[in-house]
Image 1: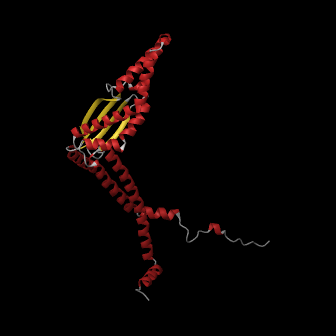
Image 2 (image 1 turned 45 degrees about the horizontal axis):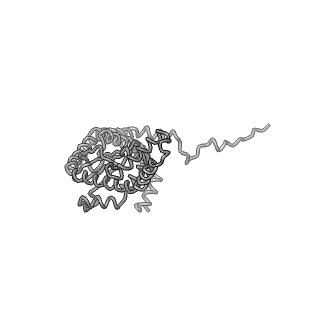
Image 3 (image 1 turned 180 degrees about the horizontal axis):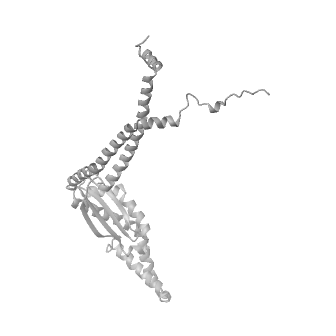
Length: 287
């Protein structure tokens, strides 16, 4: 029986163009000093920046804040819903009306005009919040604390006028209905608790329509110097820089590996006469 010649499996023969992981590892090990040196340098520089730069940046922010604090003030005015007003609406219902009134261009224009404020950029209406229990807080940032207080007082006055106008029909109806009811002969037969509730609603409506009670009344006024911009804390500045340094070190590490392969490729080309000849012909130095 003749021997059969078996051709070698092509899948077992390494392709000349195939990249070997061992070769890649060899290149990395040969250039390990370059890779580790660049990465270590990046770590040292990044550590120095993390230790020094946040403090300098924070001190600079404080200096800017101190300069701005001399001329900028935030004034907050906290108002409470009058108990008499809560007979005719919930805190949530009044919240919507208050927000719409404060944002009304007509109300803002009247308040600006009343305080002789020409440039709207002089006023920053920071926020209007409701704690859910009938307490509203308005904040404004201006160059003058006294002017900011007067501005908020004017807005509060305009809000109360708008609320009174909206409630007036209901208040008048409440007063009229109660006065007609007590004149009836069978009013004494009504449940006492209902009669007491109707009486309190009648008195509350009378106090608001007569101007004795405002729908919103100020309960707290605060003033403090503020910076125009938000000053980040030292910890947040340092944490942000640490993140950037870690990304930068990783990038340097990957670039150093890439540089190692570039240098190895150049070395291989220089050792190959055929490749050198091709390069010289490409540069026109050899015919």
